[in-house]
Structures are given as C-alpha cells and as structure tokens.
Image 1 (cartoon, rainbow, N blue to C red):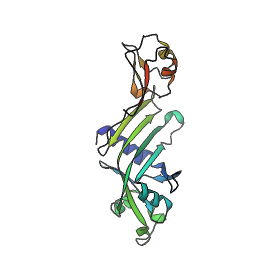
Image 2 (image 1 turned 90 degrees about the horizontal axis):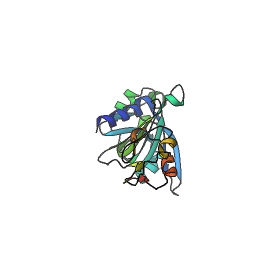
Image 3 (image 1 turned 90 degrees about the vertical axis):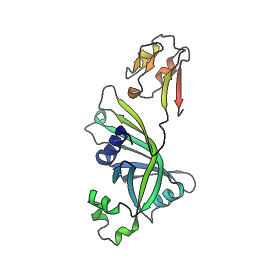
Image 4 (image 1 turned 60 degrees about the vertical axis):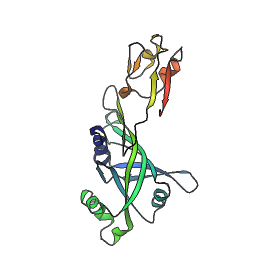
Length: 211
C-alpha cells in the first residue's frame, strides 16, 4: 500500500472514525447506516457488526460496500472527506481483541466475552477511494486504490482540440486550469463541476469515466 493510501486510511479510522455505509437489500434497493471504522493497516480497514442484523446479511450476500465520512471541523471549509467503494470479507473473530483494545467504548456495548460472540469482523480489503480536503486553497483531492485494484480516472481532461480561448479558465471556480498547449486541468485541485466542458466552444474537454 502506498504511503498516501496509508495516510488516507489513518485519517478515515482515527480522525473521521464514524462513516455512512451503503449496501443493497434483497430487492436491490439502497440501504445506509452509520458505522465506526475500528482498525486500519496495510491490508485495508476493519469494522464489525452483529450476526443478527440486516447489515450482516447484506454484507454476506453482496460482499461489497460504499462508504463516506467527514471530519468534524470548525466549519465546512476546515473539513476532510474520504469515500471508498470496494470488496469486503468476513474474517470472523480475528482482530476482535485488538478492536476492543483500540476502541474501549465497545466494552460498554458488549461488556462480556459471551456477548461479543454475536460480532463478526469484516475486512474492506480491495477498493478505490477519494480524498477531499476543503481546508486547502485551492481544494485538494486525491484518488487511491488498494488490495490490487488500480485507480480509475474520473473528472475532466482537456484534449489537443483546445484552441486556448480562455473561457474555461474564467469559468473554473478553483483556478485549477494551467495555461499551456493544450490547457491542462490540475487534477488534484479540480472540483469535477464540469464548468469547463460546458463552456468549451470546440468540445475540447472530455469527461473521464473510469478509463
């Protein structure tokens, strides 16, 4: 796992901790709930749930989740956000002792060893994510992948059809278009708002859809 990815995982587990997770139910409809990220390491992130919950059944049936979380900053412009979509697997009681040691509040919910047998640990071991930092000017974003998954490109790109008219530069809210031949979008500062594509008179801006 790259250093940047390890840093993002640490932010997710230690600074954000509580995230919204989406799965689908037996009818294929989306379901969300808030969970805590309990651990992180070079192999991914870990969380737990009780075997009797619908969440557990959905995890076992689909083996795939999407999650998002944001730090609790002093205001919106001081926050960091992380989203990940990827594959999960049940690892049973593995790391349960480590999780309770790292997250002592869990002992108030499941105080006895007998009560903790209801819990299974899930490992998000392969996926792609995005990091978004509103505290920087311009904003900073980064894409990352782990578990053997490759980063898929999203956002916008300016092609060689660019005629350097400058309309996209004027329309960009983050001033993240570099004047060159052709113009270039600085991806780590881009909001993905699409203004550049909308205003381009020659169709030189293309949307990247995971290629």
